[in-house]
Figure 1 (cartoon, helix red, strand yellow):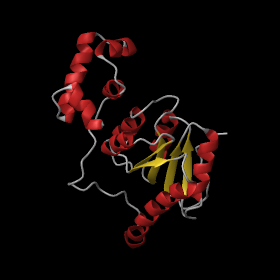
Figure 2 (spheres, helix red, strand yellow; figure 1 turned 180 degrees about the vertical axis):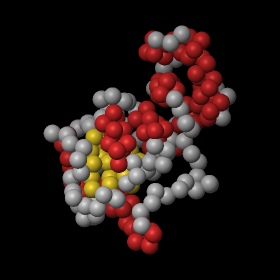
Figure 3 (cartoon, one colour; figure 1 turned 90 degrees about the vertical axis):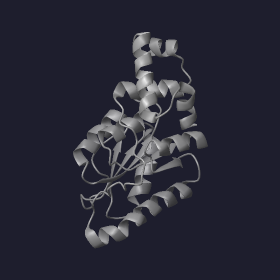
Figure 4 (tube, one colour; figure 1 turned 135 degrees about the vertical axis):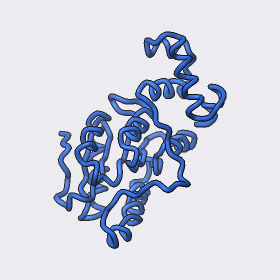
Amino acid sequence: MFSSEPLTTASPHRRILVVDDHALVRMCVVRMCASLSSELEVLEAPSLAAALDVYDRYADSVELVLLELNLPDSKGFASLLTLKRRHPRSRIMVLSGAVDEAIAAEARFLGAEKFLDKSGDPALLRAALSDFVNLLEPARRQTGWAKPARRSSEPSAPTLSAREIEILDLVLQGKNNQEIVAKTGLRLGTVKNYLSGLFALFGVPSRSRLVTLFG
């Protein structure tokens, strides 16, 4: 049964949030995270809505989100973009059972720290998580935990509305304008206006260049 309460009883200043709709997978990842450090609390959520609710409650202390992209209430990069838009300083590692370098590159462009294969060798997944936790540890010992500020040289993910996220996701799925109209219920002119806005936001002149940017 899903519970948003932490698995451990550690200090409330270090938390990881695991977001996956598959209960068994989520349980395994939660236990793996809990084994990394006795100081970590591990939170879990089976959907994007639940994840946003949990993150809202623990925003000051969540160090990392492990996010499955395809959730019951959000598909594809909409999950990542929605979470980053709500919490721009969140640090997210994407979990996926389908490893594709183009998708991984797109996830990183949109703000993910890493793209991890949850169906591969569990030792590799654990090593990646352990490396992340260890990377933060020296700074924490010296100064106490604080979310790192984004360096000025780091690119930031564009801020998108929920509708822009939906339309971008449909474009990246290869949908044409009429198919987007059918999916969203918007007028054709409105869809075109949204697309023009996306082109401007990402600094590209056309749909093909937008798709190429993510591929």
